[in-house]
Length: 133
Length: 391
Image (cartoon, rainbow over all chains, first blue to last red; front, top):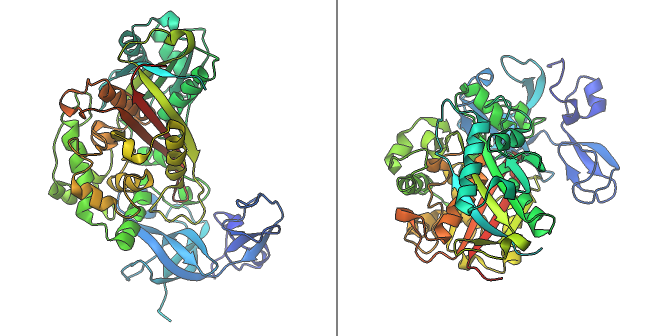
């Protein structure tokens, strides 16, 4: 299991992080029940400030993606980015690690944890193609 | 708000402009706008200077407005730099509109300036991703072409928009720019040229992307006592609107700031999309123009590809879009673009656009976006200008 400094600890459930476990964290509004990623200080829907961390799924479907060819050298272009739809109804931005697979809109993807890039070893979530279930 | 009129506009060449710093570029635009308005330096009472990359593209990080105006012989009056990423110039225009429309000032200068060429590629990317959320996608290698490439993938998957339709935006805008003396590019390109150019972010190629450019533009707005005697070249500002995005769970085929801004602008101006005779829109990337057609109500959602195919947005068509050549071919000196769009619309409404004239143009719209947060435009500024002197 990967361990070490994370890119942004706000993205992960604090309790799990303390145990070296990386669970994507959403912010649930105590006033209206709205769910948001990442967690924030006030609810975009009702402005409520009673926000609690809740665990999010670690798998979803690829809503859209692209291969960046003219991009930052540290990420080793071409590299893939995209938006992942989680079952909770959230659409999350992510780096995508296709491995040997072709990416396509709608494909199932699963969260992985790994260093950001060749120059920055801080851990972040990324998504990779999962087997069809 | 009392009536506000644009009585002077100016535009420098856009392109790679060596040996002139941002302040001098801005001064040039200010002096030319004054000449066009038939006013002098002493007439300007307030000024706003749109500029986004000061301090990186050009050493002047702060107080660029004052620096430029000093060279133009103007000092002492209230001046402020305005930044809203790529819509900085439009926001400078809107500040000027509100300053005059509120009755606080009678004569305002809206200036837009950018010097941003000559940077290394990583530096340029870094510059541009400052308009994204630097705590999330900005950390993960996002580039602006990347945002719009994802939008293109989605638009094609959801509506069947084709790669060729997307490329046609660049072809149209390059053709228009041939007729624009100030444009960055004066070269026609074909769909084949677009598809053969290097991949930037799939499916977008180099020729789907606007360039970085240097340049400046200015507009002079008047109201109240200064509007008592207007020439036939004066153009009324019917609406000047700014909206922000909503950013959550973006669909990437529509930009909320554009939709909200357009709705408010049409309402304030008392016109509908069908009344618009020409529009200058934010074609930072080809796919963006297609999405803007839809968000501005020029066609239904998903039908932007069909609209470009129909030729409707050509100069001779029912709704010319980007007769100037747009960001793609006219160039995109970030802070100047918003004012450049005003220059084009005013010039068209005055009947002074020469070979790119839209016949009978009476109602013009400018649409400029700035920044992208989580796949949604951070800002959208829309102006509607209407020809005709009469209070």
